[in-house]
Length: 218
Image 1 (cartoon, helix red, strand yellow):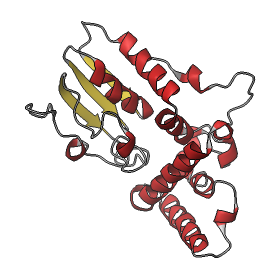
Image 2 (cartoon, rainbow, N blue to C red; image 1 turned 45 degrees about the vertical axis):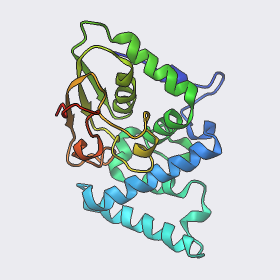
Image 3 (cartoon, helix red, strand yellow; image 1 turned 90 degrees about the vertical axis):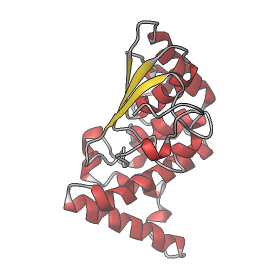
Image 4 (tube, rainbow, N blue to C red; image 1 turned 120 degrees about the horizontal axis):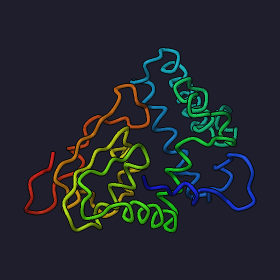
């Protein structure tokens, strides 16, 4: 198993306040990601209360964009709104400023080249000539996908609960560009719980064409 969580820790920091370490650009991306998940929750959350709460939070955001006083006046409104959904409760979501959930980790990976390179190297170090299957979950699926563009022997990929197809916030920031199936991949399967709000998209195939002169491994 590849481990890169140590790169998310700031020396001397205490607690799980990851958002406090985000640069402005990264924090903006975290907000976009949270808003994307709110929109997903209005359609796919299996809890009616979560659907209604997500819709209410989006309404508040849109009202404030029109100049009204509302949730936007608070710090990190989309993150705070997402924290109100019961679906995210098992992730330990509190107020956005104390959130140790997935959005800051995804955001820092996509905006910090040092973390990105380090995480991919941990995956590459765990892949040898005898490796036949790489499994990536959530952010790990993003790291695995990008890392597999740098190997030269065949292997299969299994992604679980992957946010790879989230347009703008994740997909448009993938490397290489434009995104495509890693050249040495022999098969790619993607498993998603239909109620998984982080993954949002069940079918990755339309977003990832095969490399030139090769059929899709799906």
